[in-house]
Length: 114
Length: 111
Image (tube, rainbow over all chains, first blue to last red; front, side, top):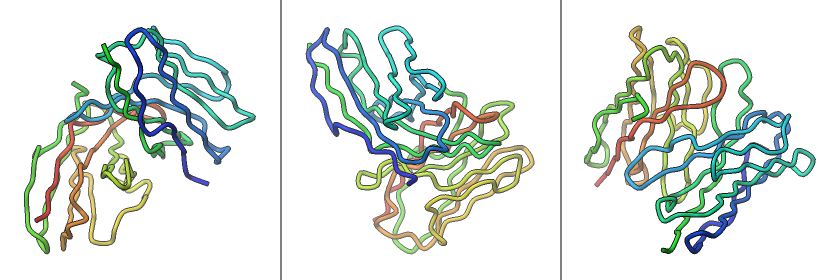
């Protein structure tokens, strides 16, 4: 029940295309859903996050869509660029009190071809 | 730069040995989290400390232990090391629920 399932494992997109990564969760107590971006040799860095009281959040070219009833959320990268090539992780946490341990998906390696 | 520092960057050691990984959180952050990243297990939460107290425990082996000191830096101690402990170890910090800021990680190689 603590798992977060992420797909696809890898993704190749042409420059200018849309990259879509999907995640699903089981634990309805989760109340904060961040996406992290990780470049080789670096630590994960927060990209964008959403709480379940909204269905969509957009920041620049990055959009999270959230479907509470289906317990699914997805990351859309519009106008994908070669600089977006990285590994993306969805995550979830309860955020209650100060126990905000992140439960991560397995990650998606994105390659954007020029 | 997230403001979280970790040392050392790389660590190479032998099976059966003990190592200590160090993390300094962002200024003002009271929570420190430790995560292990491996190819087969992905990013796994190990343990969280908040203002010196253990707050949550994840899939942390009994051979592993951690502590957070009064100056809020944290150390992760790994003992009786096995080949399978080779991984990237990240610490993260925050001030409350929500965004966690990750350090650059320590790459541990056990030979």
